[in-house]
Amino acid sequence: MDRRTLLKTGSLAALGLGFGGCAARNGVAVAPSTQFVKLPPVRASWDRVIRTTVGLRPHRPSGFVLKAEKFGAKTVIHNYGHGGSGHSLAWGTGSMAADLAIEHGERRVAVLGCGTVGLTAARQLQRRGFEVTIYTEKTPPYTTSNMAWAGFTPTSSLVTAAGRTPAWEAQFRQAAEISYRQLQLMVGPRYGVSWIDDYGMMDSAVPPQRRSTAQRRSADRPIPEPDGLLPSHLETGRSVLGPGEHPFPSPYASLGLRMRIEPSIYLDALMRDVIIFGGKIVIRKFERPRDLMTLEESLIINCTALGSRELFGDQELTPVKGQLTFLVPQPEVNYLVNGILRSADGSIHRVGTMPRSDGIALGFMALSGVWSLEPNEDAIKRTVEAHIAFYEIMRGRQPGIQGRRVEASRDIPKLESFFGLES
Image (cartoon, rainbow, N blue to C red):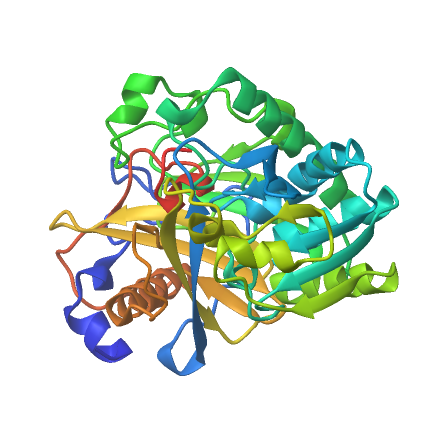
């Protein structure tokens, strides 16, 4: 379906006709205030699509694994299972893994994996005086970490409510604290880390995080996000923009700040740092657990993510397939937006935009238990068409079909929950 057909026939063609950024829900127009937020819209169109990427998040219902154990003649320190939170938590879990390694007498260490978790663990080990060799099948830009949305989303696809324990929660909070501080210190063009305005479309003036558990159960998510997992001081404050104060097709919008990580810059920079500080990277694939016995190092840091399912028999690991479609970059677009929109037939359309220097990432996907790395063409079509219609409205154009209606969800969950799991 091309753009013209979409605007003539699709249910998204009337997106926002029920209300615009300057209309209240009762239909009474509200004059724009002097605080109206002007944002350059994304030029969304099919001829600006440049690529689609697919990655498999390593989800464990009981959360990431961070512990040491004997494995034959080797000591293995596990650091895997971060779900969609690898970029957000890796500096913290890497620091904690390195602290466990200090208890071992050996100062030569093998790190398995060259994604964000492996690279940050290697750097934390080097800071403690270890001689590091990374063994990996793939290096950036071909790692799963390169396919990530990569905002600071430390609870994304991370853990289920039933899987949390007090001991694990203490590990999580320590990891989140360390990572949050480290990423702040890396802000700038060298590492591709920056702060970005984060908008969320809302039907109510009450932010979702302030609503009761019962209210959140009635939303699109059947299970509420577990309360109290992320300390409040690790989140920046959010303000609420009312009708006439923002350009989105919803009565209200929330505005906060979020750290953004550009994987194509960030991972290459980390890899260079590992090498500059004397580390080595060896391309090697481990197919069976006994292959690890051939390593010269007696101390191993396991950062193999989903690979730990086969190497170490962790059958709790489950892939959560994610997919992003990219548009040609627009330097003037420097804000993140997310929201849920419902059409008259009850279908849901998710809008999510993350601008980067290498392209504008669109879309959310979280298919649990799916191992395929093939792009989902239907999802690409839905994602692109939804964003074409959304940004047509932001530009103030009439989509062309009267009588249809798409409304903002009554409860917009946090960005992390768009990736589909409880945390």
